[in-house]
Structure formats: structure tokens, C-alpha cells
Length: 396
Length: 186
Image (cartoon, chains in turn blue, purple):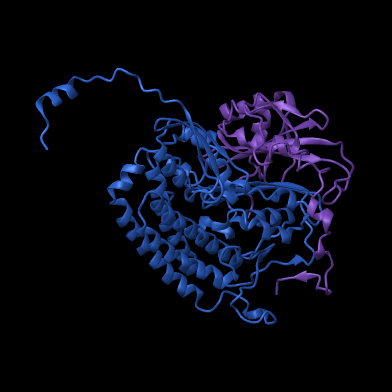
């Protein structure tokens, strides 16, 4: 079909004389949405393609752990706190255990500390692999998921071989770790240790994790669509992140080289060489890259720990009935998602008088109204995914 | 291993913090804890941020000190019923963390909001408000964060019963067999 000359003239001469009215619309995202990793609802005002005044609505997963902890004794509480951030359940236990142990003046034996450290880093790898699986998927790339989940399964198998649980190990004991599940009959204490072949299988798995990290980098970092959707999107400047209490990989992506593994001593991280990767722009891309790099660093830590793990007992001497002397302590740890800490107030009883749970995701997503102000609607998903939160960790 | 974060021997972080904000050093294991007066709460945290470099907002919460609790064990000593408001702030270089504390009267628990000093205090104060009934003056959005609108009561008060325990007492209190006094070791 040809266009008649006077039709062209007509089109070029046309002017939009009416200002289009775009009244604000309220957009609900969630509570059930694949990108929210649980049940999170966002209420956004939308003007055209831009979102304003985004208010997260949380609390759908609130289980009241701080209240429940007041009617439980210390050994029972580990079963609760496993479930705060279920993607890295093992890592949640550590700061609470350390807090109770320090109040009691108990120090776990070196071997137990190494086992804790190895399993914590495995939890970090499995958490970051979940992110490496889900984040490209949210941006429309399905392939990385298969690579990332395959290796996460290997890591979870290793955690399971020691603890008996994939998600909720409940493996720590005050003063040490539980005798390993695959290590023989419980009546023969001498052989209740890491299951046979665990160390060599771990070395093997770490090699695979490292090669998968390279594959993931090839798959995602060379993808122009991913780059376009993440570079300079959702930029969080360091001073804003700090004032909101944003921690972990998100803080480091904003260029702040702060990692509690380097400055705190809740586990013997000072024995190992590892680097703290930091980003430059604090955008979605940096947050993706940091978590990939942290997988490599964790694999390196695990290799070093497996090579140098000392022999010895798994459990310090503790009374049969755990009573924690009166006192207060705050112990925090670098969890996969950021600073996880417990403020324990003990009155000398069987359970804490008050347990404040500081979880990483709660503070991390409290920045959402700030970071989503004025963003394009499709970028909301890219930014949400890059914050890598778990609603159990938000709501507790 | 001694605490690297806390005010161990020779570490004067807690003293410096107490001096800067005009507060007192409180006892907490391996944790720097400073008590300030309630009317100087926001001012003290402002000083902590600006002069002590504690710019990272870690958390804010409270402890309800009360006798005869509905849940959990009673305190070993009688206390005056009050709230202890706690706020932990840290730096992001050496990881020095200070927990600031102030006492609020149980009958009239009102304190200035920290939202102007630390924007991150927003959700923490909302949580604290609904869980304890503490009023944060100057908070722009004093709405429930977790609880449904219209919920009656403040769940983290010691006087607030835990429904599941009211219905069925904890079944795990009785040990089925005598256990050795000391576990572990060789």
C-alpha cells in the first residue's frame, strides 16, 4: 500500500493539542508474586511508567519468634531460629549459640568451630546460588537457574550428610556441635564425627562450585539484556545504605568494604585468607556480581578450612541442664544476607528473659521506599530481586 | 577468644561513647552499652552518629522489665516496671558497636523518634510501637507494621499472654530419664 501525498502532509501537520491526563494509579504488587521470595506486598502510586511513594506491606510471615523465645529454653531456641532465614538456616544458629556460650563462659573446641565455619560458608554458597538462580530468572533468563540449583543441591547434600537436615539443621549445641548424623551409632562416641569421605567430597564440590561460578559469569555477564536491566538501576549510595542499616552484599555493592567476618571473632575467620569484594556503583549489577564473587571466596575459605581442620572433641564440657548466668550480650554475624545478631537478656534462668533478633533482610528492605522512588515499573522487579531478601528473615 | 567488638581490657570505646553523650556505662558482656536520659535520647544518638562515627543503624528495640510475667520465668529480683529502650549503632570500618539504652516509664512511654538521625529507625520504631506500646514523637507513620489494624494489646509486653501456652502447657518439661550431670568432653 502506498501512502497518498496529502495523507503525509496531514500527519506531519498534526499537533497534539490536548495534554494527556494521567491520573495517579495505585498498583499492588504481591502479596503473592514470584519475585517477592515469600509474601511481600508493595503498594505503589504509579504515574505513567514511574512509581512513587512505594510502601512495602510486611508481616504476612510474622511468627513472633521473640515472644516464643521467652517461653523456651536455650537448646530449644535453635529450632526456632533455624527458620528465620530458611535459605541459610544453618548460619542463623551461630550468633545465638555464640551469645549463649559467651554468657556461660564456654568455648567450643577448635574442631567444632571449624565445622561451624565450614557449614556456615556452605550455607552462604547455597544462599547465593539461590540468588544466582532466581535473579536472572526474574530478568527473563532461565538457563542460569539449572546450573546454580544443581550445585546448590551438591552443597545441600553435604550439609545434610553432616547435620541430617537440608534447610533446618538444628545442629549446633551450646559448647559445640551435635555428633554428626552419618557418623555411626550414637552409643560409640569415638566415631561420632564428620561422615566418612566428607572432606574429600567437599573439596570435590568446591571445585564444581568454582567452575559453575565461571559458567554463571559467562552466561549472565555477557548477556546484554541483563546488563541493560541492571547497570545503573537501583543505585544505593553508601551513606544512604549505612543510615538505613543495610548490610551484607548490598552494603558492599555500594562500595563499603565492611564484613563482620573480618572485624568480629564469632568464628575463627582470622585463620583464613579471603577478600571482601566491593562494588563501585551500588546498582543491581554490582549486587549480582558481589554475590557471585562471594561464592568464590566462600569456596576458598572452605577449601582452606578442610585442609587445616584440627582433630579433637566436638563438644566442650557443659552442664546437662543449660542455665545461662544473668547478663546481656549482643553478638552479630555476617550472614549471607547481612548482619544477623541476637541481643540476649538473661536473668540466670533456663531461657532468655528477652531475645531481640536483628535480621538482615528487615533492615535491607526498609530501604525500598527510598530506592524505588521514581523508578520505572519494570525496574521494581529488577531492584527487588537484587536485594535478595527472604520474608522469613524480614518478619521473624 | 575474647570479644573483638566489645569493650575488653584497654578498649575505651564504651567510655568514649559515654563521655561524648553524657551518659553512664552500663554492664553488658563484651558489648559496649551506654545509658542516657530519655529526654536526651535523639540528641545522644545524633552525637553518636556525628562525633563518634557510629553511622550504621543496626537495630532498635526494647525490654519490658516487669514482675509477675504472664509468659516465661519471673525475674529473680523485684524490679520497677519500666521499658528499657535499646538502640545499637555501629561504624563500618572497625565494626565498633555501641548499644544505647534509656529507661521509659511504663505508664507513659514516650520518646523522640530517631528517624531524623537514622532513616533506618523507621520500621524498627514502628515495630517497637506496636509490640510494646511505646510512642515515638515525630514518627511520620505510626501505623502497625506486623499486626492487623485494630489489634488490641502489645504482644511483647510481659503481661500479654501467649495463647498457645494458655491452651496447652509445654509438654517437654519433664525429662523421661535421668541424664548424666556433665555432657561432652572426654
